[in-house]
Amino acid sequence: MRTALITGVTGQDGGYLIRHLLAKDWKVLGTTRGFQDGARPLGLLNEVTFIDWDMHDTSAMAASLSLHKPSAVFNLAARSSGQGMFDEPVKIIEDNGIAVTRLLEAIRMSDPTIRLCQASSSEMFGRVEESRQTERTPFKPRSPYGAAKLYAHSMIDIYRRHYGLFACSAILYNHESPKRSESFVTGKIARGVARIKLGLADGLKLGNLDARRDWGYAPDYMEAMYLMLQQTAPDDYIVATGETHSVREFCEIAFGHVGLESGDFVSDDPVGHGRAAEVPLCGDSSKARRVLGWQPRTQFADMVRLMVDDAIRSARQLTL
Image (cartoon, rainbow, N blue to C red; front, top):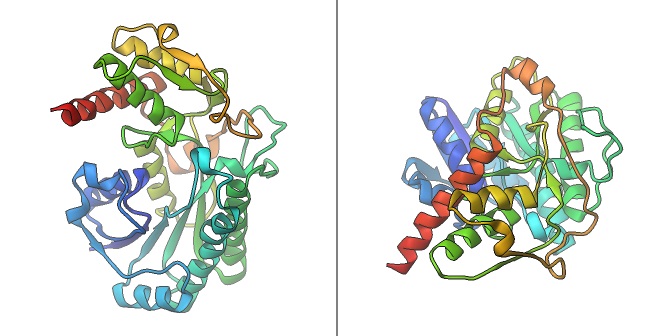
């Protein structure tokens, strides 16, 4: 049985990646700093073997890799995203950037045949001039989060070229699911709609309703990461839908799904909610579609409805 190690396994993405790997008959090892809202609600944690892991200790990571012998590592661990991209910038750089270099060193020291897929981010592009970004679009990050992800992305390329590691970066655009927390606007909207529908709230304050995002469905994106490690040669891929939607449109679909008009409940209150350096990002995933045979399967509106349905179920359980 092949063994995969997932860092940050209990976040949103970890649960879906676990499910995908188990369906492919992989054994899954997991590391985490604390339980969040991903793998636990999916009921998958009993299928994961948790191991000692310290992203700040290269030797300890190398020892764990030598002991447990995974053939693949998926690095999902990261600090702060959503509204927290400017929070604790030094820790963001350490955890999202330098820690990835330590991981690369640990793989090089323990077993250079291990295949690594790094969860990179569209936030590396920052200030963009192209309507759609490709793998060749220049990076100009505008947040500590984006800068840290770019450092890690660069080190992936360096270790791949200089040491011959099978190391890949999945440049993930915004991807959502019912497990998305309220620190992200999508999770906030879905839960807000649920509370309003159930009579637990009477309104929802959001930031810029005209802000646009390239939003995809998290399970689809985890499939892309898996496919990247099944190739004969390592490379980097943009994982995106190639279309953008506004926060306003997200609200309209979410409220409409429960028979309500978003305009009756949503107010635009950017104070305390807006994100600095707001830029529209839209990814060109043609390389992933061509090389990996991947494509997003879940449509935007369907994803929104899934999130709202789950939020309503959860809110009802809390009121019982």
